[in-house]
Length: 446
Image (cartoon, rainbow, N blue to C red; front, side, top):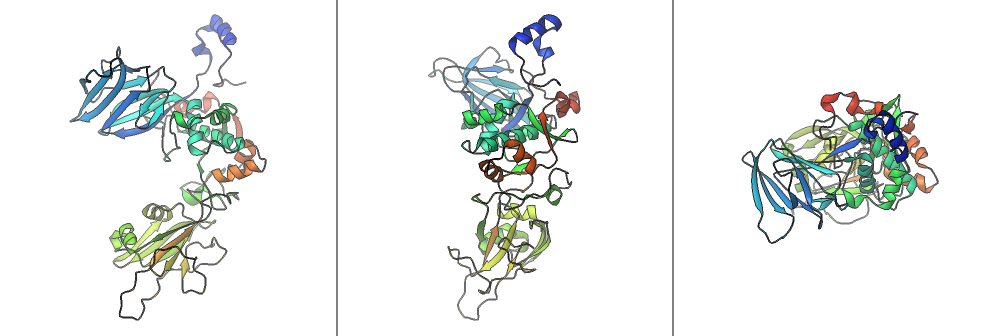
């Protein structure tokens, strides 16, 4: 069997140590993740209770702190700190070079407070792009227990949680070593990580019961992306991004119970002028290209002062849409709850080449003509109807839940959404941090 990062029993480690040196040399270490938590001009950290923070760097190595505030002012780090002891004592101050690296850890299992969250492992503070950068370094299995709880409700079926654990582990390990200062972000830009509060007994069980398992295709870790809900069919990667990966193809989804399987949003004239300011608002929309599942890939927006060509992603960003599987309609100008317009109410639709409601859309969307009256009527309101939440590529989390409820195990769930993959134990040779060479390996060690 290949060397894995499963810990060896203590007796076996002792025997190996006697024969060939320290256990750390014998057994492969569990990979560690460097998670970017925050970039800011000011950072405040504190201990949870009686157990202090331990600091390395900046000449503070021997101090036990209850609280530490770090500010970046005029290219220097200003540190205000409270030593462990009498909380009534005044804060002490120290000024350090912006090139100083600080590391904080604690023996308290409740971790270190940063803003409104608590984190285990070690927190590293450096200056990057004129801001204080906080990176959390910890073992991947502890990291995943929080990711699973941050990405999925912890009371969902265990098979869905296990599928999420394997997908998140594969995704995280594939990112290692790609950045000099961190591996992943704590937000949806990578995968959501909310610290110790999101790690529950059930998420830990999901991680522990799938320990070391990853997905590979062609002998390499896959890009195990996932999303909330696809709206009925996942998207092929080549329809959203530059490359078509063989395991990220469109498959039927099972997300009908998702609260965002269908949704709608409305925008008045003021909101449209804000979203499309360079053309003075929006008067018509024309879809120029759609994906095979009906997501908008390219469209033209016509406004009073010109027109724009936008990708589906750009449209989603400008209007804050949940997905690009959308269609549009002009209403009569009243932003109020009302029944969805029908085919005979004068509304003209555009959006999906395959309408979510099973109807064919028009090629362009034009607001209704102004009424022939002397009074000023409300401006038309744009209504957008959509399906799903996210980019639609890879595993649908709501679909995973539905499959689990129908009796599928985590392997069946993963192999439905990631076609042709192998699920196996992670090997050190899979690690990008090793494959990319020493210059890009994690810089922080203990």
